[in-house]
Image (cartoon, rainbow, N blue to C red; front, top):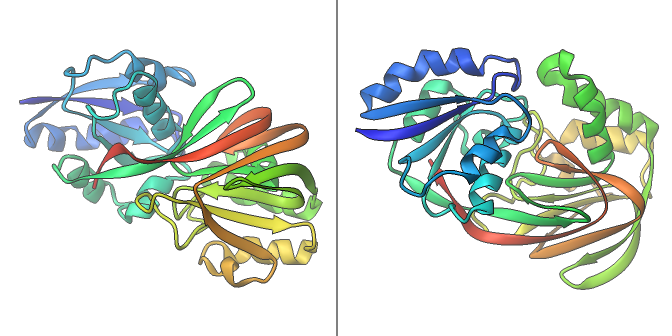
Length: 296
């Protein structure tokens, strides 16, 4: 019998993580695992617990939550140099579920079978250095409308999974422009844009196909930039097409693959890191290839 740490975020998404865990608990046991349940009680709880694990304490970690909970676990592993010891599996009970959207198993029964298998792929992550902290990202690091919309979406949690959509529409209508000095693979320029996103995953939010040619295993960051020469109607068009990935065909959407980038905003800004919001003036980002063991 092998020990498995089951981290359950009870307030993730539609607040059904704990119910899903109990529905799947017998399947976990039937596969020869002894589950230890951790119900998170506050933001950062999962990261704290994971960072304090002993390297031989569990066979793997199973996450019942969304992108934010996965982000906490990944950062806890990295913080204590434990990435090579604990494979992670994800049961999609969050709002965004970018990881599982990319892996294409949103069904709980398929997800649990994958998480209990021995099939592992090494997953890239993005390392972001802000003014006052370092954070790994599994999915996206966004700035501009993308991040300010995330701030608004947190105030709309009562709407459930559609909160991202509603917040995005509101911010698109406002059409605020953001200015900064940026560096992409060492090339420096000044920019005024609607938003700028560095992607590690294909999907973000609730199924947005933000970087169709990206993914966890290509050792590159997919940059998406919409500059200031765009109208409100065109921004709405971006939002409409992003779910199919066809926004990349629009002439005012600039796509590229890079190894690193940095943003030095003219004033304090909000950055979106896998759905979490960080206030900072600067961020410097680089790809860390093959860092996390992902059960697939």
